Structure formats: structure tokens, C-alpha cells
Image (cartoon, rainbow, N blue to C red; front, side, top):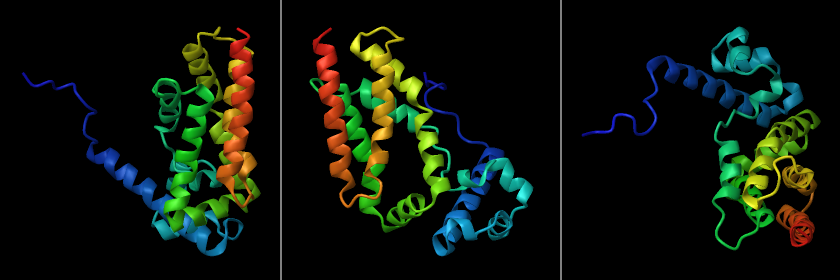
Length: 201
């Protein structure tokens, strides 16, 4: 008998149209931002470029900064899976380092458009702060998984600290010639501290 419940249900026509509109707005915004700079592009211009009203634009993106960071509902899942599904023998800080290097750096290395995108973010204070705030919203969920995987109490402040600093680490790489090296060194520091803590019980 066929399992009708396996896999997600197909997206309906209304949902497809909504997703297409959202993507069109995000694409138009990014194109204009890359051409002229974030601060020199207005919301009305973006709406016109995407052929939507400003009201429709704000239904999809409540603030201007959100236009640059199209919501990724799988982002937190991938982060937590990096800890839960790490290979045997790999420490939690190592797993988080690999996730940071792979998901936050690999795209920039392989695509000139992503390089331009990261340059835009790094050179625009409003975007710089917004993306970090978005990323840090995963702190509590990551801390809970770290506690679960390490057998520590759910409210252990060390787990919260590791989660916070692991998510903050990529910030230190901004503006450096070799961001990979900076991220690697930051996680080496976290590894030493976590090893010392877990070894001490």
C-alpha cells in the first residue's frame, strides 16, 4: 500500500504564487542594492522593479533589512543537525566550526554574486547588525542541543556560552584578508575551553 503521508505535501497554487512574488521582490532588491548601494535605494523603487505595491512588499518583508536576507526556514535545522549528526569522535566545537566554514563561507568562495552580497553586508552597518541579530536568534536552541549531546544540565550556562560564542565567531572574520583562518582560530579557542570544562566534569 502506498504511504500517502511520506514527504511534504505539494505546494498549492496560492502558495506557489506567494513564494514567486516573494522571490521576485528579493531578487529585485538585491539587484538594485548591488548596483547602487543599500542606502541609495528606496522601498518604492524596489516595489516598482518587482511590479508589486509597497503594501505587498511589506507583507513579505516587514523591514528594509529583511529584503537582503530571504528567510531560510531550514537554517536552524542545519545548525542543530551539525551537532546532532556529527561524526563519531568529532567534538561539538569542531562540528560547529565545520558548519560555520561550510555554510557561511563556501558560497562566497564559489559564486561571485555571493562575494558581492557579502561585500554589501560588510560595508553596510544596518545590514551588518541585522544579519548578526538574525543569526543569534538560534542561541537558545543550539544551547539546548549542546546540553543534550554533552549530557550536561539543560540550564548549564556553559552550554549557552558555547552556543553564543560559536554563533558570534564569524563576526570576528569580517574585514580580514583570510576569514577562514580567523574562524578556525576562534573555534580553536572555544575547543580548548570546552575540552577543559568537560574534562573537569
